[in-house]
Length: 420
Image 1 (cartoon, helix red, strand yellow):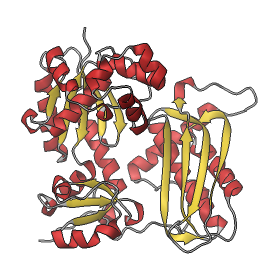
Image 2 (tube, helix red, strand yellow; image 1 turned 60 degrees about the vertical axis):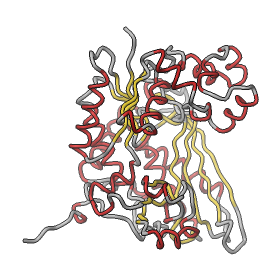
Image 3 (tube, one colour; image 1 turned 45 degrees about the vertical axis):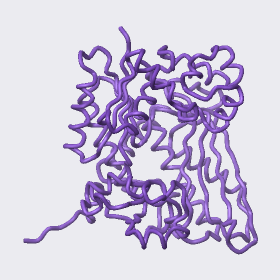
């Protein structure tokens, strides 16, 4: 039986989440800003139409936004994460297997359905009705083709939000018109290498000899060629492309001058990393902490990083926090005004495939019970309700968020009140 894989993607997800709770934003150019209200990280179609680009520094386009009536909002990750969970709860009603790829994208198994296109349209309508989030769905026999189909569904109004690349003739036409740089897994470096080889479209990449693709782009290139030909190379339980690492980075609302403040910040970041790792069923064998001063601010300037390697790959927040604090102490230098720091985990492995260390004495069962209780408490009472000691206390590094909307679904004190 030929697989049918669907990729459902929330349209302008952050902006759509804001519009669910503030209908006044419908039809108005709207942008969502990064940490500390620095850069644009999400745009409505209306904002794109007036020339606003992803990554634009807000201070440079503030006057344009005022002139054009653009609504600029601080990022509200608590709201976006909860809305993502609600959308995925709907997906689980429509498919036996759902793999969350990112906060706004999920793969669904539609194999065996008599009418996958009709099923996709019903899915879109249900998600919109139950959550308020508009979506597009791409269908294909592989994850890569489903991503291509989703890309086309978002950019081709005549498709009405659903694109199916199961038919060979339709697939060939779609791949022939798709720039190779738009293929999932082809980054700027790979795209430049392929163009230099004369490969400019997805169809030309599909027709490349797999051995040549492997030689030029490693095993990633070979997989892309085969997946574009309709041969699945990525299993459901495999970490998707782009998920080999996990990071939490933040710019600080005020420069950090004291080591203890930095240690509290990286402990908080490590807790968040642990939550992400456990949610995705992966573990980290090593962890890096970085920090730097504002390169555009007054000196002196400094950037540094420190790393630790665990005896066993882990998703236990207690171990991640201890490692992050150890790495931060290594990198810290007195006399600098640090403006940003982050915790990065790379080389992720599936949690069920972690090799035990002969030198460690880790109680895995106890660790899993503790983390399960921690996650359950925070899901029930809201993120941050239960935290580890090193991350607790009053934060001096809290980010600026001058235009953050209320956290409607996760904070009882921010729920709107109606009075008759």
